Length: 240
Image 1 (cartoon, rainbow, N blue to C red):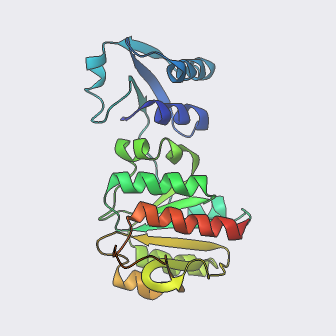
Image 2: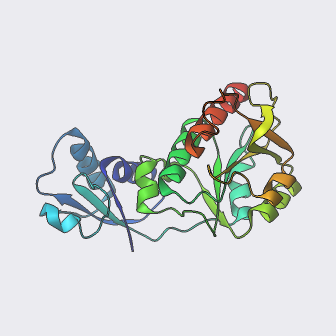
């Protein structure tokens, strides 16, 4: 079993219904409108609830749990074919691919931006990349419950497969064309690399286009989650 914690994460899991929630543990000291929303949703969906001493919740969560922890089924990732089947019928499909982003806070923040700005699916690598952990869930404010996620062995090979599906690949990389000047073609995938290393060489070579964010020379690069939000917003404007 896995655990998710925090009011937003648990609430969004209840709303989305994409995970089986076995039970919810509530601190005896937890109160307020968000907690009442969780209690209402849990009752509607028939999820058992238990009020427990606050220190018991700390055994299930390394994060600040905000007085609520949910026991959920283990995360089941899609494979690439399953993800494509889910998204190919969307209007102007948009995928977000993370290449070597290990910080779960960054992964969660990128997923949150992706959901808010109209992405249809997420692709994560199995190696040197954070999975859908409790920290990712918290950092996404529960947004991971609202978007399908595939996990793949090799990002470079995955790009080749996406091209076979007719997907255009845009890599975020310093020195690329200004994102504000790019005319995006769909279906498309945006590939985001880590702040320190950027895109891996083979990944970069297999991108159809490289795009970047114009900025002053004072800072060499933006945090991956900040950069992805800016680029996704530009895509959102042109997509709509």
